Length: 361
Ligand code: XIL
Image 1 (spheres, protein in one colour):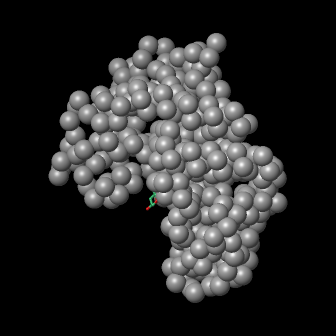
Image 2 (cartoon, rainbow, N blue to C red; image 1 turned 180 degrees about the vertical axis):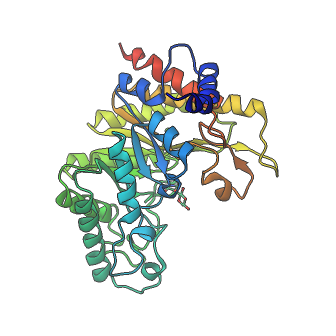
């Protein structure tokens, strides 16, 4: 290593020595030993930023496109499939030995305007959806190991949400309960029989009406051999009042009942946002509480053999959906700050991954 180069990396090395627990390595090295995938949502546009790319490659062994495999990016118009940004992410993942989770084939949101305002009838929508699933999954076959086939189809009571795919006007199965979801899983399995197929949902992580409905659907699908492999639990946490102990206990219970059906569970979109002032500044004690919530969630996953991946919805506070989503009231939801320095939450996650799946033995 040249002296100039050494001088340049020295502050970074010093920072690692100061901030990492004794003997611990990166998240991905510790995760590998625990037999769990550790992932993050990625915006390919940022891959050209050196610190973004080096932190990502060092810490994670799984990536998921935050937006670039959704309809609104893949389908700029009815006749076009634009795979460029998704392909860029795949190339990065392959160059750094990372798995890729696909997200998402069907969602009532993040759809292009030509689709939502196109006044298509159910037969047309069914044909378009089938074609989309088929083309996209075949394009990424062998490169994307798991797909969120259907995203956020239920409301907080566990009823099906109105959507273009379900009943507005839907693909011809409006009013037939989870029938359209089943159809999507069957098409997905036909398109790529090797990909793991997930149902991904928000706010159904603990024990509540929504997680009961997800469980009931998953059980019904398993009983009738509908091809489903797993359930994704998003875990966007937006209140620090969350009783971390209670959440972890309920999460464990929910993961256990889903695993008992023979399904895998992935934590798919974990972030824990904290209140920030108009300048984006938070209270240090909130960051400590945030770290505890991260710690308990990671522990709950590691304590259940059926929980096979833990993924965050981004990794640096520089790029997170929380700012715009909360209209600036919340932020700092991720493991690294805006300068890519590891936060308390990072240490908590690293420590739990280092401790591994020990509680099971
Ligand atoms: C969000 C992205 O982070 C934003 O960039 C985008 O503007 C909107 O979607 N649940 C999901 C994710 O399943 O796809 C959402 O991602 C966050 C909530």
